[in-house]
Amino acid sequence: MRIDIVSLFPEFVAQCAAFGVVGRAVERGLLSVHGFNPRDYAEGNYRRVDDRPFGGGPGMVMLIDPLRASLRAAREAAPGPARVVYMSPQGAPLTQAKVRELAGRERLILLCGRYEGIDERLIRAEVDEEISIGDYVLSGGELAAAVIVDAVARLREGVLGDAESAVQDSFEDGLLDCPHYTRPVEHDLGTVPEVLMSGNHAEIAKWRRMQSLGRTWQRRPDLLDEAALSKADRKLLEAYRAALEA
Ligand SMILES: CN1CCN(c2ccccc2CNc2ccc(C(N)=O)cn2)CC1
Image (cartoon, rainbow, N blue to C red):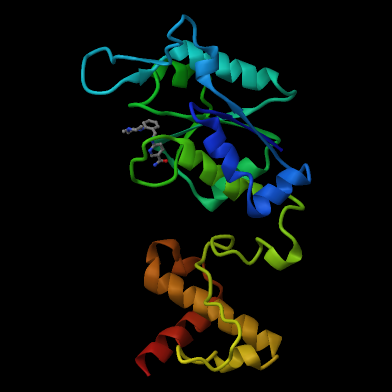
């Protein structure tokens, strides 16, 4: 998979692909991340990439042509169609389902806005979809792009070993994750739930599923569509609730 980043600070995003599982994926050639800086494609001796907004108001707006030239350079840097994604507060909320869809593509171009944003005509002509990583404002789209790089990369075949498998990830099945424990069993901060020491893998799986269901119900009821739960899941959630009242 190739991901191109159009940004005034491309090394910022490239750094996010230099560590951990994503860094290893890049080393192994499963993924490549390349930066394109609109300033390198800006005309004139001031190499302007922004200008004042028509209609007045504070701040500056990114100019069309340096961005358009950067996007063209990114497209031409490698074969094959690329999906152009613009990270902005006006985008569709990023979900794990959307991450899975983006991870299925061979090429992405992530467009990072600075200043007050980008001339709308460039967005309409070049952007395939706008995505927001949450309802808050960042000083630039680079952190949002880094989120997409990480979330997408870890779903690519071969990136995560069995040990780190994304399959049990929370949100993979639409639920929050269960609690995790490791050594020591006895600690002044408490002990480890008995079931996890039982070696009974069916019971352990049931306990973990119950915890995921219960925590989702408690913390993110918006994620829990109780109607869509299997009978077994509904029973587990009942057991979780009953244990709270006990
Ligand atoms: C002071 N201005 C800085 C630039 N910004 C802006 C405006 C338009 C596009 C990109 C940006 C870059 N910022 C982002 C980007 C994404 C997210 C997200 N939620 O995904 C939050 N912020 C508007 C505000």
